[in-house]
Image (tube, rainbow, N blue to C red):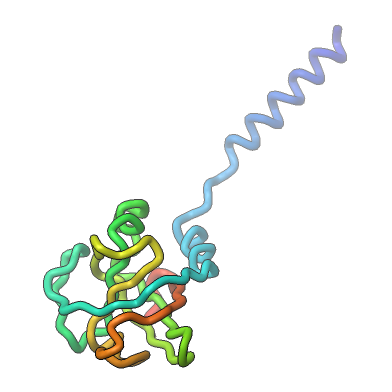
Amino acid sequence: MFSLSVVVLAFFSLLLSALAAPLPDNSTVVDVAKRTTHTGRGTWFYPGLGHCGGTNSNSDHIVAMSESFYDANGGTNCWQYVHVKNKANGKSVYAQMVDSCPGCGYDDLDMSPSAFEAIGSLSTGVLSISWNFQPKGWKP
């Protein structure tokens, strides 16, 4: 009977210590997201007032992520930089995520004219891209 009590006590002690372990902070989650490479379509738009609350112009290197991605994150990626690469020519650009795009697929990005032109021609209209987040607070 005594050994059974010791085993049960040890089990619950181990369980409680596991539950008391600290949760990772947000920067740990972002670092994992940074390593995730998303592949989708890159398009361009004329910016204005974005979903994150700021106003931008055509010359700002900004992007809008799909509305479904934005909503899934609760907007936590606002003001975070992404690295976008044109898969056809290898050119890349850093742009800040400031808006959501209702018509975009989950891994698509809509870019300002200046960000789009850094990796392709506006007349192309649509690019095959890959992209990933940079750590929060990072700036190019």
